[in-house]
Image (cartoon, rainbow, N blue to C red; front, side, top):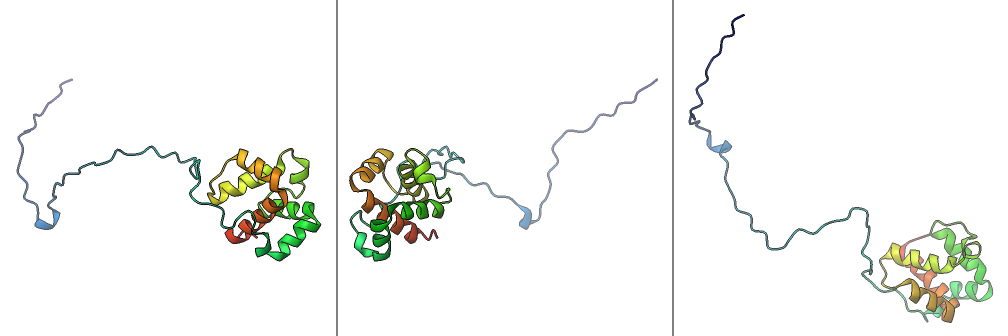
Length: 142
């Protein structure tokens, strides 16, 4: 069997392009290094805002103040349902109310820590429960 080989001319050939197809070269100057973006993190670890109402703003919302005062378990179960948890979560899960407060902080990008949540609920539990309810309302969580 015989194979025929051809040689191709590899010399560059100038090509005339119409003006609309001509390309331009631009220089890009990087002034800051690209940041690694973790697609799994929704928010940062520190939050970007404070609570929308103060801890002792209980009388700004009289209905939630009265419900919290007369039936604290009812209010906490209602809040658990509002954030998508089982209504029994505050009393069936150890540290459930602390977990709820931490979850709302995370959902809303609120600054704070679990230790701060624990101390707030221990020292001012009913006021913290009212604050959590006002925050859910202000965030539009029904």
